[in-house]
Image (cartoon, rainbow, N blue to C red):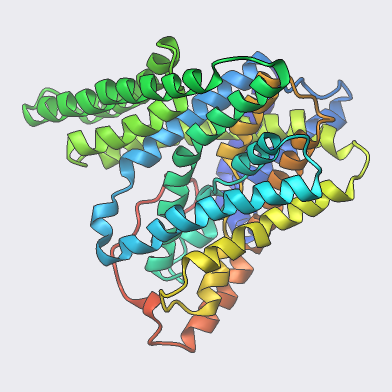
Length: 416
């Protein structure tokens, strides 16, 4: 109850001064991560266990809601010729980031197996635009660039989810000599897709028909979307499938079946996800960041974190955008703003829970330091770099990234 009280009080305080904090490039993830870490120091009661069931429940529920909401609001077909930009990041940049991260983990950290290095890379591959709201919501950044970053972050966590699931099974099989992990992983994904079709597809169609006949209200539609998001995750887990894959796929099927007419209703689910994410970041700060910062300094861990936030992300982005005629400054800007966020935190807690890892584990320390550094660095550099980037664009009025287009759908936020 004390933890809930602290998170609620800080959430209220943050909501009251959100715009002011935004001017200083201080976002919610940084506020709540710091709150969790400082609370452990002040209370002197020891960090909560990363294996805590409550932490697992909140983090998984939050990611399920975010995956469903993101997938149900991304409209690739509405991007026209611009669809190629996010598809390049997802189809070329994402796998290259994963491969490069795996190689770096194997060489720098001396991972015991390739699977462990690959799991670390997969945990840190997804990006989270919510950590760079001053970027993806700032009109000074061209709408093409904001759409590209927004679509990438909205889809890459769902794409990486089955990869993380399989790698967790591989690492567990190597450590415990379990048999049949391939069959089990494929079955989990297959069950998840079936659940997603039933919940997202059929649910979206039913909601569309019901709404057309005037049987719903604005509030009931919002509750229906929230219920479908919850059902997709819980239904998959109950059926022996992967809940995160189901939530993401259900969002895609829901968008297709409902005709894309319930974006505003999805905002209710997004808002709940945002509030729950406050608790996730606070728990991450308390259960991971504070204990890891007390560990003995390891240059290999710090080196991997630095590489992950720079070369491992920026080089694949540069390769993916070859031939697009975007300015070098735009390519560098896009490469830098790939912050590690909520999905990485949830994947990390899954690894800790399923593999029985402790804070002293190289994987846990490396992932924690990378995520924490991303929250700080990407958050604090957002506004200054946007200002510099806008000034550079002003010198190139004919740059292709300045071509007008529709504004991207953005996740609900507290900032104006």
